[in-house]
Amino acid sequence: MSINTKKKQSSKKTAKKPAKQPPKKVAKKSSKSQIQNTLPDIEENFSEWFNEILFQAEILDYRYNLKGCGVWLGYGFKIRRAFLQIMRDLLDNTPIPHDEMLFPLLIPEDQFMKEKETVKGFEDQVYWVTHGGLTPLEVKLALRPTSETAMYPMAAKWIRSHQDLPLKTYQIANMFRFEGKNTRPLIRVREITTFKEAHTYHESKEDCANQIREAVSIYRNIFDSLGVPYLITQRPKWDTFPGADYTIAFDCIFLQTRKALQLGTIHNLGQRFAKTYDIKFETADGNQDYVYQTCYGISERGVASLIAIHGDNYGLKLPPVVAPIEIVIVPILFKNKEEKVLKVCNEFYKKLKKEGFKVRLDNRKISSGRKYFHWELRGVPIRVEIGPKDIEKNQIAAVRRDVKGKNFIPIDESIKYLSKLLKDIQESLHKSAKKRHDELIFRTNDLEEAIDFIDKNKGIAEIPFCGEEECAASIEKRLEGLKFLGIPDRYLPVLNKKVKKEKEIYCSHCMKPVTQYWRIGKTY
RNA sequence: GGGGCCGUAGUCUAGCUUGGUAUGAUACCUGGUUUGGGACCAGGAGGUCUGGCGUUCAAAUCGCUGCGGCCCCA
Image 1: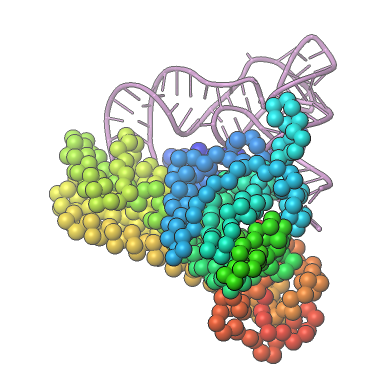
Image 2: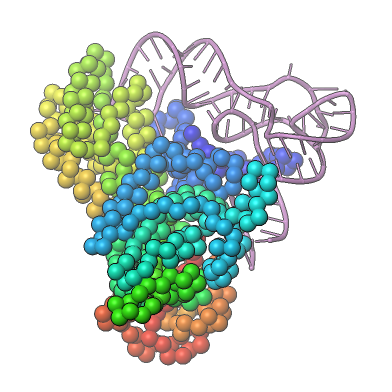
């Protein structure tokens, strides 16, 4: 199957178009059978590949006919669920746990408008509910674009004393943002179906800084589990979350487009929101003070990143931790031998199931080659084949998805072998992605070189920079789509005991002496 | 934000210029034969031609507009 990524060059009138390029083969095929269900080439046409894989691998159906909204399908939903499980496990198990909560989707206008900075940052993106049935509402209701304004008035009611602090909360819910016309499945959507937002409340600046460190470490863990490489960067002050003191972001550079995708953000909110929403507590010495806050969020872009980072021309490669199926068993059936093979497969299936593997036996009456393509497209890490020859030799054939080798294993050793293989795949996916990702970062003192590097879509660059917005603006003007990501983590006091300082470098634009490189590149 | 192109079965597509029975493939269903990398044969089912309005004896086809998609530029 294939979804609407067709690119029709011809108009009705001018019809006679150039011959359509056949899709690039993803596999060797006998010459007489026709090619179908192929994916666009991931290197040549990443964005088409991405749309196709979402549909073909049954992750998302984007034919809902409402811009920026789609349907999570069965297989995709399971991946999403595993992704959420990773986040929940980490947040629930910090020394002082985060409590999961759920706030209303609707926010009354007056409450929403209270925090001026946030409103300004989101005002052109808010969906408004103006009617209840046929009755116009006296106070219109915002569909949350983010939940600070829903949560903080409640927090003000809950927090009385320093004994109530720190309070750590999170919710996983959908958000609505009226994005412009350039929407993209999972990456830029109008309904963010999956937004994990943590909000924490503290009695001091120091506690707040500690929380930032905890958040960074949680996020590291999340993306490491997905095998997704990332850069940690403090956003420039002009690109900080509205109302926050500073914002630290996790970005992933897509290996094909070499554009950075923001995967998650961590904000130090200081006391600004506490003052707006009057979140006060009584200190140990009997005074009143406003709480210090942080918030940090991750969306379904996490799923997008693991699809994009590991995928190839055969389809997905799922890290075992998020794979809905870790091992698929394909029986190799020959005439008059079916019963025997199916019996052995069934026994092996039950054995793996009992051992706790996420396993699936593919009994369908289609050719085995077809099954291979089917499961490879869906990124199942290991395929086990069992045929008459294997039964004779008391073995199984194990094929890994990531590097495609076939190995024959004595059936008695198979459990041990398979669980080790899953671990290997998990690690090797991460390692190979990280290796390719690291190669996309280029440090130079020469602005021309940096711009050339980015212009040729080779990745992102680090250049010496003074931090001034005007200076940044003149550099951004040099190349379309060029953006300042911000300050690399190695320079951030909050994340380093000893902060690194560069010597004898000068801002790429104004030539002032500086001590930091900044990251610049193209972004999604 | 500005501009361009497009929408026909689950999917892809022919037909549109010059208005008159909607083409083919694939996927799907049934039966048969097969199966160590996308099998084959036979039969079957599947369409408000993106929604609305208009022109016309007659609209997939011409015009306007909504919705949706893709591309280029800011």
